[in-house]
Length: 116
Image (cartoon, rainbow, N blue to C red; front, side):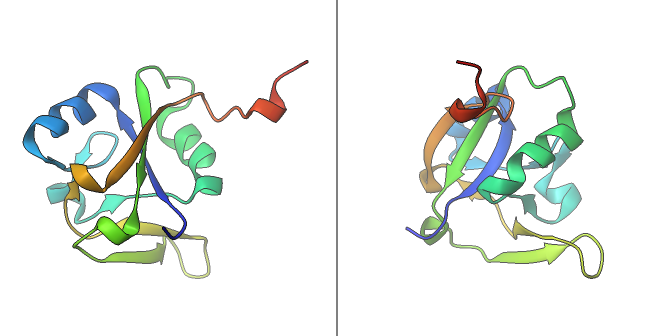
């Protein structure tokens, strides 16, 4: 598997998607149909995305770990502004079978960041 792609999802929306077979939320409050793609992140990008979208309201979130090899639709790396950091965007629905792991969102804290 190449580097995994990540998507921060509201747990109830992910659970609903498991019943339909596809996840179609692009980002907080916006669907794939409204946005045109699903926002994804590389591991190092996720904490910043979470702060931007959820701030301190990060309860009931999960991290979807996506295997890009299991995606049928294209992933394009695009910047929000010219010369800016590029983020992966999935141009189609996210198949539940492409999600290889679901992790609880820990607010971006890493074990090495925790006080001893």
